[in-house]
Amino acid sequence: MITQPALDFLAALRVNNNREWFEAHRALYQQAAADFFDTVARFIQALASYDPDIAKVMPDPKSCIMRIYRDVRFSKDKTPYKTGLFAYISVGGRKGPLAGYYLHLEPGNSFGGGGLYLPEAPVLAQTRQAIDSRFDEWRSIVTAPELLAAFPDGVLPSGALKRAPKEYDESNPAIHYLRYKGYYTQRFFSDGEVLSRDFTDRLGECCRAVMPMVAFLNSAIASEKP
Image 1 (cartoon, rainbow, N blue to C red):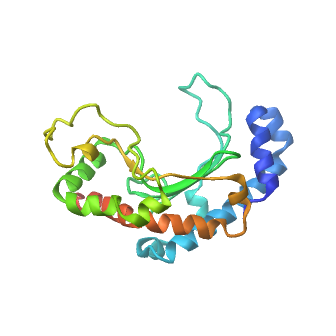
Image 2 (tube, helix red, strand yellow):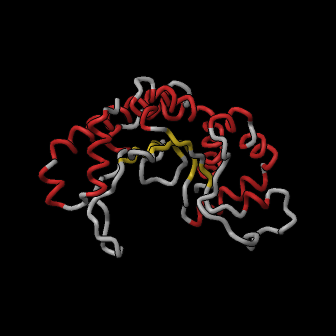
């Protein structure tokens, strides 16, 4: 589970984002990373209890967790470290194209959810085709009371076009969603919630509500594979 020292380390890193400080406090980072690893492992267990696809592959937590080191090669911001810890859990792997579930840990800015964030163009085209051809099914999934109770903001777009994609008409009943550049849900958790012993159970229950959307998106992507 997440402990207060883990949050304290990340809060301190935010204002001491340099290699000298990090190396001097590496032991604190390692403890925070261990807390996060344990939390991700518990999160995977919770997901596997209701998502049969996750249960089949049981991803290794280590393979789901992003590195804390930033890629600064093409960025004006040269700070070397991310100020939060992030994990993405998907049957296709952390770097694969499939929809999945995620957790971001950061003091005062922790959140989790599921979906498909900024997919590459071919994958986005596949999901749009599925939403267009199976719109009644899609609409029933993303407007389900269970999903909206867990994620009051509903499905978020990770960016959206101002006009319809060239393949679709503005009068298309699904046009609101066809403009989206991604499909995901997000719920924020307070530090107190993150530190609670039942945090992964609560996170897992939220993500249970988005499982039908994850399954829909993945069926769209898998159905288009050669």
